[in-house]
Length: 348
Image (tube, rainbow, N blue to C red; front, side, top):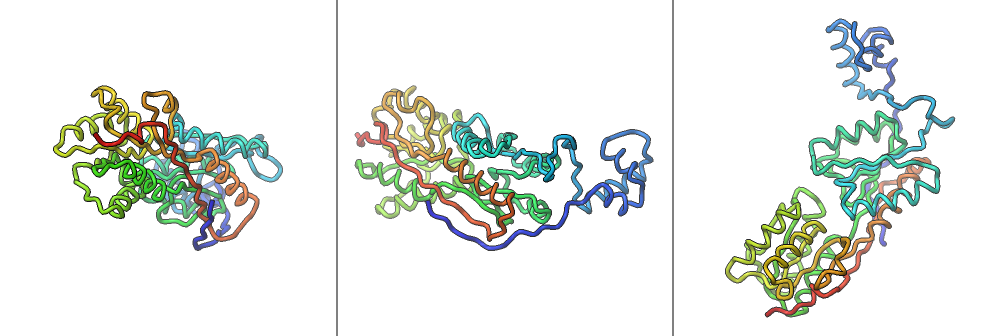
């Protein structure tokens, strides 16, 4: 693992309180409480003043019962927001986070975005409203500049798997580009010259890095890339299945496929098995998945150390919670290529 540094420290402006909102809106504390809690009996013009004041101050209601707070003001909870908690990769990250949190007597509250880019800021806000002591985030939206408000208030956030955009905070990543290069070079070493690529949503940093690794390996080998060999925004098992079926029908179809995400690899496996070509077309996937080693042939994959990523991310978050104010760091966790058979099939 290597550690890289980027700029900017952490500011510590206090969070806005209900009393601050009342002062700015020029209403009573009880009026603010009624508006925040959705109680009836508040005149519309007063409710509008309270809402505008809350937005201006970036006020978030405290939804955590005071009885759950410790003497130090903490709630002994941290948040984890990922794409899909059922995905084996994110499940392993979750386990890694829990390994560290458990030792500190801290509970982990996890939620899924299900690729709903538009909900990221809203759900992060819900975590903040519940006063979790810090947040681990897998960025899905194209811009995380909204986190600047939380950083100014001193609320620590660490990103996992992807770099944030628009804000500089700690992040823990895999060696996506380098690992993809290795995977494609592996296929080239078995004699393949026509290699297809199944790429996730290109709005995601990981997808762009893996596509860049594919292109770099092909370029270094002096191999041309037919545009029909690259399929982007393939983000599900079914779309992958359809993309591979279509790819196999093209002239000069690929003799090997690099699938850059675990569900995408599963879809490619299904398409090849249904076509009876699983022993003819080589396949290497990015991310391991259950039963990959017992299929026929076993699926060769790039294995990310997701649990270790969760460990490091949680440790970084607790460091920030404990007051560390150094510049944000990006931690790179290495991955390994595991040959199992599918990636070692030579071209026919």
